[in-house]
Image (cartoon, rainbow, N blue to C red; front, top):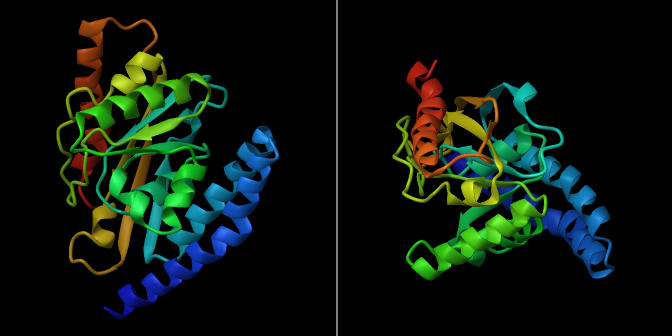
Length: 243
């Protein structure tokens, strides 16, 4: 319990200080019309922030497959399983891409964290509203087409366990409609940090980046097969257990 309280204080201080030294300068650059400079600034600081958040956790993280990360893909959609509240900082800290996320609308109400999500180009989704889902997909497609990588968690919510849930129907429309390259990512054991007991505890986490898959020429039948293939690819490392 003491570790959990200390980390909550640490996280709050980091989040607060980041508003002054990272978020505020970013918005000033945007107001001045310096979008390219703003993107470059966020590319560095989003990773610094994520690494700072992860550094405070009792976690050891191993990453494999970084050679598969496309350096110049014009359209990119990162697709990952989802075990923990910490998956977003884990992905941002360990994969060298400035990416936005399809995030649940409730996060708009979290002070300071919401500013970070918007600054990274994330899209808020109200899971109870079909209209919100359609708008999120449309917005995501346009952002990917404009060169903004977007990360999605097709399970729709955290599994809070070593198991991976079934991908939601239509969850990959974002990638298919934008004709993006898909970068599959597996996160293993992140649920052990918090979700297992509700308290921060040590965990050995593994992140696996798989080879990208192009969707540009896929027909509807091939898209369905790809969704099944992605579940197999992303789920593969989970079968390795907790070791």
